[in-house]
Image (cartoon, rainbow, N blue to C red; front, side, top):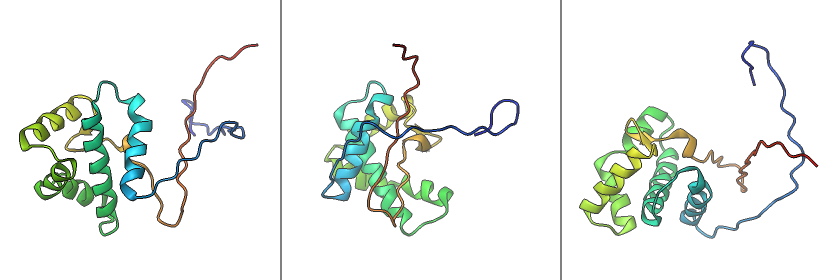
Amino acid sequence: MENTKGKTETIEIPRPNNIFRIVCDEDNDFFKWWCSLIRHFIKGLTNREMEVIASFLRQRWELSKHISDPAILDTMLMSEDTKKKVQEDCKITLSHFYVVMSKLRRNGVIVNNTINPRLIPNIRDEEKDFLMIISIKGNFKK
């Protein structure tokens, strides 16, 4: 990591002392769990809106198996065909889907017609486990 003076500094991460294991039976379960965990970083979204995000993330992951170029992947993700799949997957009307999309844009989930990269899990096909690290910086004094 580079600091403001251009020097690289190493951040030492202590051994985790709190580990929680979540077992997902289906791919869709993973994205629902992911959204429930990141929900605290996206304020004011309903369960339905989180379900739409999870569906978009699952669609993105499926598309990434065949498309390696991120720009093309983002274009395909926001295509009308993919939006229709998400709408059907979430079982919502077209008008409700547009309302949800508008709210996702207002809340920074969709930026420049793509999902905010911070919200996309970095899944590697060769690994069975997905690790999520949350660093909470605090001034803990005894």
